[in-house]
Amino acid sequence: MDWSPSSWQSRPSSQPFAYRDPSELDRAVEKLRTLPPLVTSWEIERLKAFLADAEEGKRFLLQGGDCAETLDDCRPPIVTSKLKILLQMSLVLLHGLKQPIIRVGRFAGQYAKPRSAPEETRNGQTFPSYFGDLINRPAFDESSRAFDPNLLVAGYTHAAMTLNFIRSLTAAGFADVHHPEQWDLAFASRAGLSQELREEYTKTVATLSEAIRFMEALSEKAVDDLTRVEFFTSHEGLNLHYEAAQTRTVPRREGYYDLTTHLPWIGERTRDPAGAHVEFFRGVQNPLGVKVGPSVTPDAMRRLADILNPGNARGKIVWITRMGAERTHLIEPLVRAAQQEGMAGLWVSDPMHGNTRVTASGIKTRSFDDIEREIERTHEVHRALGSRLGGVHFELTGEDVTECTGGGLEEEDLDKNYVSVCDPRLNYRQALEMGFGLARLLAPRA
Ligand code: PEP
Ligand code: CO
Image (cartoon, rainbow, N blue to C red; front, side, top):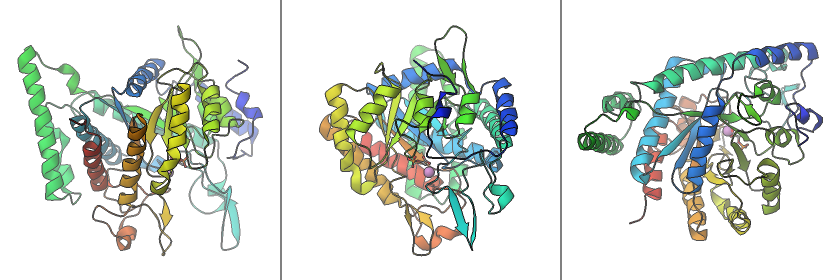
């Protein structure tokens, strides 16, 4: 296989951000090469095994977090509230689906954003678009928008700090299911949760704690494993300088691992089979997410599968469909093709990116109902074909933001606390409600 961590450089990219000073770029990349990895091959292989289980219907994937993390968001309250909402959703799903949930955050590196237009013009001035904190800065002026290789190192250090905090929080205490008070209703009270939702959640936590006590009484020993939970990281592998610098071989294993994250994904705009991103990711051992939107054809999917997963291994590819609530029928030919050819892959729904719209007053938003409908319909397409929706992918936050409508928010509320630097996210209450809706939808049928 004629591949190396730099073979992507001879391929075209639809997301060109050319660094001005090659020696400055080299220095940043060299620095990243020498720094320790953010994740290990052991963890990556473990996630792959979990994903393979999910393909067989034995686990379910919950992936979520910000559209774009910012370096400034590397603060304890923001990290903990994001972790909490993901944990709480996973608990609700575990209870409803009666199977283990694989928790994957869009965090510790979700700093690079693909753009539809390379440049932005305001009042007659044109500068490069904002490609995320790993690449340039959001303010609209020449120096902020310049592509800055030093941000590669800044992104790495902030990812490392975020991940360090997440690892400590999830290692003990914070996520201990023996202490449901940790699962935090005080926190929930802030977010204007309805009495109904609060009661449903309290009941779920109580049922699970009781089940644990029962298990412990039965086996006469403590279920230690429940004092911690496992979290995996993911981000869009957009900036290949960043990914390649942390891509290495490791002792006693074959091949290269991208050690910036467990589960990198290839975006809707970068999945050209002849492009740089597919070239890069075909060479790594990580499981790979691949976003597929309305323009994908069964043939294109087949080609991607051949390139990215030539051995047709389970646990390797996560197909993340993002069609929009009105276009979920487009998933059908994809599933049929995969079934006919025995193509491996886990089917996951991203109900966010096909449902973005702009309000009359110019605010980018999404409605809770569209998001929920895309999942319901996607689930139905799979069910009707004898396939299975194996996971969900959300843009969400643990904060009380006002970015998506529904769940108590109207269009006129959107400017009250709109914080996202990119796409609109579900807020705390919307995310928890979504968790319960999903649990009902996907509960095993008697
Ligand atoms: C994203 O996940 O933030 C994103 C840009 O998605 P997509 O590639 O599906 O448009
Ligand atoms: Co997004």
